[in-house]
Length: 210
Figure 1 (cartoon, helix red, strand yellow):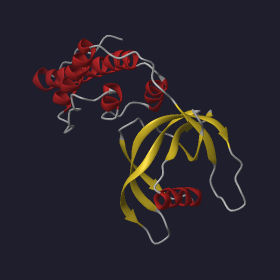
Figure 2 (cartoon, rainbow, N blue to C red):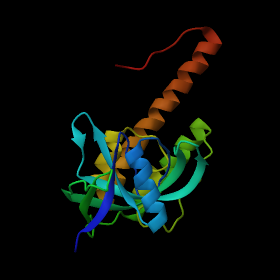
Figure 3 (cartoon, rainbow, N blue to C red):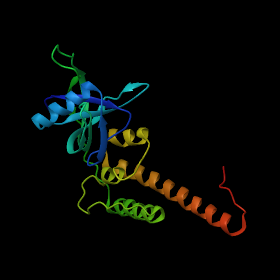
Figure 4 (tube, rainbow, N blue to C red):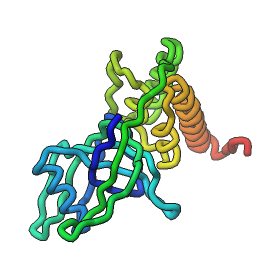
């Protein structure tokens, strides 16, 4: 499949398909990038970047809403994750450009869908965690083709974890991994609530095993 040229936005977070994410745009080059994307109704690629540099695989982001415009050109926006792309080549910045663009190719999943049992387990863990935390989070639609991303978009996982999910090309393996993560989160939250309840009744706490 032919590569596309899109603007690049390295950031210390990971955006998964379907996720809504607020961004504060303050650097001049990214003001230009967002302005160009809005003018031409196109996406840019958000790449996770840390001290080791930017990753080669990211997600296209489209501006879903402009929340606030400041007099100095800064913006508060909400973007939505769309497709996953692999960065093939970073282009040189031209004289009239302020931000990098790159040649990117779509990342396609293998034909390895999750089974119904895994989907139901993931949804049960999602419901359990929402119930424990009291969070107001809508459950994904039954028809979600990529339930793993629909669920991952609803939790604040560490960037490295979300990048791991993003790079997997198997919905089955992604959902299995997500079940592990949600199961661990349910256990931690339930344990914390148990400790808090005991501390309130007799002042004694049974700490979790190391």
